Image 1 (cartoon, rainbow, N blue to C red):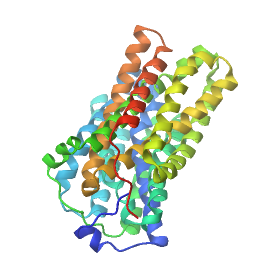
Image 2 (cartoon, one colour):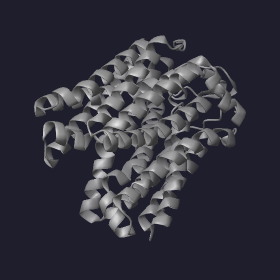
Image 3 (cartoon, rainbow, N blue to C red):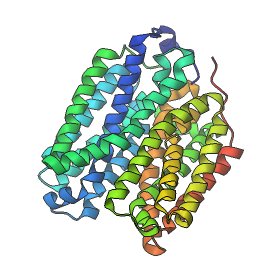
Image 4 (tube, helix red, strand yellow):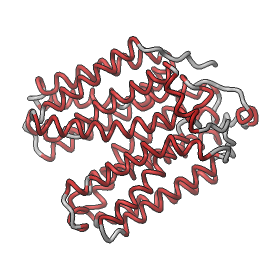
Length: 400
């Protein structure tokens, strides 16, 4: 990450020791909490739908609503936050998330659930946009890549632990218990943020026009195209990975869970490997990620008939996609070092919009062509990201 000058940076206390890293861990927990809260309905659709008297398809809109709200709210929140201290801002946003999870746990009907999920979307989009650029202010320059990877490990770990844990708790104690637990976790994170983070004054106020003008910079625009292609392609394929594996590999429900666990564990490793790689050569790291993802999605329907081969391909897929968040956000933040929060808010907006678009495109392909066609859609979009990574204008490396 680029170290920038400015009033806030000048006044930042250099927390090179344990306190700075405790703050980084707290930010990772915050990211873990918001991503888990966003994705929680994935494992709870059937009981939620039955309790709220809606179909599973309608219940799935609770995930769509949250993603779309986050996509819209993140770029709008940063200008509204002005020069408020970022520790206080994060605490307020986590409190909004907690209210949303409490509302979801209580919701007597689908309308109340949608309102609750809107609050989750606002909290999630805001926390991600603000927290993503704070690692650079908590640790020495040499430790910034590792700290950034740690913050974004919250995304990967939420996929591996948060969502399955929610599904397990829902099966054990009812789907509402999962949302109560998410609210409790949010409360604990709020307390940790208040205690472990130092005061973090805003670096500079950015008007909405300044946020919207950032894509005019070709380096920022390239980064946003990269994340848009990669995330849309991934979710076009991954949303339907279960029926694809059932059709191609003939695996049952038990093995599906195992293969997804393999994917998730590999994703955590990929997050840290990509963070280290991005610190050395950002473009090369993204070329490797996009090329590998393109090839993996292309060959899975062709070679995935063997369970062993399918397991290997799922591990490669997880390892590759696990590095997408940290590498693409690093690209965007380096492209706009003078407006990290504004750039991060655009990143979060594009990322969450791409999740919704990817699921939509995958559904159209699966219904119109066939289930395995989703892999082709994902592969084409990943190939588009590969071309972008090769020919697009890259940001300058971080200054030591």
